[in-house]
Image: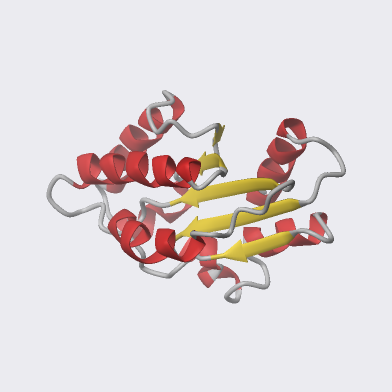
Length: 165
């Protein structure tokens, strides 16, 4: 379902026929940890819909927004292809949510991540957190998720595209 939502969003925002360079960053949900590490991940599936385009999956299981800043962002420097539709997708927030000040740290990091991706020449997309992992996250995660999703949907991340999952 997530792939379908992202796919439709990309079609609506895109010039048809233009090659795409899709760079996905995030945690295990981006990596495909829950879907056989990659084969069923949403970045892999997007690659199937856009033959001839480049799709890079930089998702790391257990990754936090701080890790994206220090580990994943440096890996995408120079990955913007002139003349292509360069798209950056961020799906992060499941790990480290139970740490002190986690919401404010996550939001500050997301703003920084989106800003850096834009500075590298990418159109940016952010995904809201899905409710499917409540049982794994603990009883206070739903409130954290709701607060983060409201913040994302308000546009405060400065992402060009918001995908509400």
